[in-house]
Length: 193
Image 1 (cartoon, rainbow, N blue to C red):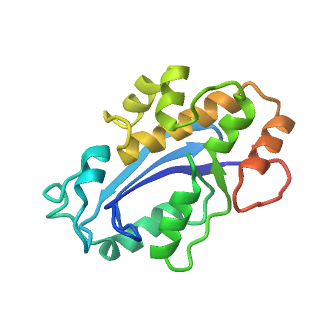
Image 2 (image 1 turned 30 degrees about the vertical axis):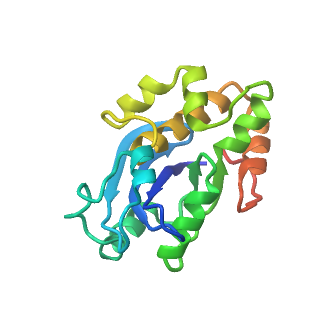
């Protein structure tokens, strides 16, 4: 596997949710490259107070941001059809597929599945508790120039760093097996890394 993007989205709390923040960090194999892209969007429906308390983004924060549709071409240029990585990546895959017509990544690797397989005795599998337990918080913040849990760029970086931490000790054959099981698109190819 060459290049892939760790991805995270934050929503406005509507049903269905609108994306108000997208963060992506580039990976080359299992390593972060330092390339980070971050967008905020003005939703059609206001951000609900309960989700503002979670991710910290308010309606005022995105009042001057473009609507998602105005940035689609830029997002597609960055993502292309490269594989994506995320914690419970189904959320990102479903959210982005709804608003990016025709976009389909080559694979979608779920770090939640990877963590459950490789850390069976861990008590909590949320991204924040895993980052805390494995000592990854500072590295994620440094990778995106600051931030904390529930910020899209930070959570994308945390997913990437978590994947690297969990897969690096494994052989190529073991990595391939873990990634095939974690790919929610079920791409079956030869050596992935």
